[in-house]
Length: 244
Ligand SMILES: [Zn+2]
Image 1: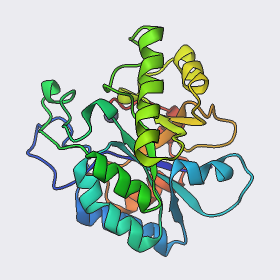
Image 2: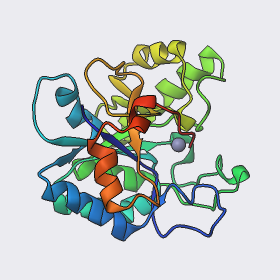
Image 3: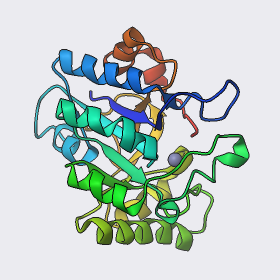
Image 4: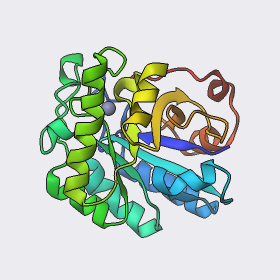
């Protein structure tokens, strides 16, 4: 059983009541979480690096590290920590908003947060981390037409691949919105894996096109962090859906 951690923003959390406040992990807390993993002998890996462990081809103390949306604050506050620890991580990019902002979340009351530029994407990749796709427009993949769903998958993949000159094989469903038909399209578009927002530890019997994750939020304290990652909590078994 392998935890795949889901992060969004690594920044000082916004004021109470703001949407995404819960999804903002303080930089100091993020650093301490990575240090805890390191201290316990775990290695943080991007989805690409994690796949052999998920398939059971490799064994070791590993944890998947994923960041949704491609926030600039992840570049600023998480990247140096990851590099220092020798960890790798996947950053899921919304290609229609390169150098833009989280406009899809603002009508829900989220604060403005800048998204990575083309240069940031290249820097992330050049540092040995993985770039994944999070669609072109951060859409609900279970609500768009099949043609649009395929476009969201292939266009974002092509754009990212041409930017980094490397294969993009990992996908993440915006808002965790997926369905059996959508999973097939992800596979058809040439991805090797996709993460969803079901809570739970991942294992090789899971559908690799809807992998569960462990959501790490603002209020996740250190002991709770380790419990969430490494124990089969009731909440991990229930596989409830988190909607970001
Ligand atoms: Zn997202």
